Length: 270
Image (cartoon, rainbow, N blue to C red; front, side, top):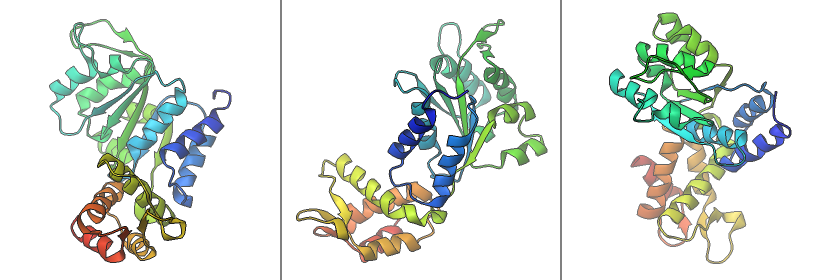
């Protein structure tokens, strides 16, 4: 069952977390979430830098509108299994990520890279129980698990590299976030959003706007600059766009305009 008003609340939260979302590709993802049956666990696919963690945080916020539930991010890629087990499952003396996420969300980044022995211990978590590293008795838990990956997890299941039962439970809601090159309509808003966030982070007034919206004293992202941004394939997605906007604003732009030449130079240096 969904909570009363969940659809409206989820739409509001997702649009708040991605105010630049205008393209049909990303709006289709939002609509799939709005129409999905209310289940606990979520699997997010997407290239690096497409915003999987941001979407996970938006879902978490929608599920816990009071704002007091924990969101615990756990990077899993390239970690020693024993160290990963300690950080995930904890001990009687030291809380692991699962215990810290109680009543909230455990976000597993790079979930496809989990070692098989960790997968075996993680599968019961999705059924509401887990075992600490120094304890034989299982502990109850109430945790929403969200996994993110840029791998084909179904293919890894077929290869025997990922457990079928874990994939089955984690993918009750399974979404693919499209890359930025398929979201041309989102690029102007994303560039302005990134630019203003960077200005604010550097102690500057966040006043970057499009030329048509500019008033006296505001910084302008010119239409020529936007054309260059739209034409670039963005293999690094939003991370690459962030770096390009930072370079354009602070290394190349002079005066109050960010021009096409500024953006070309910034992209070339990313």
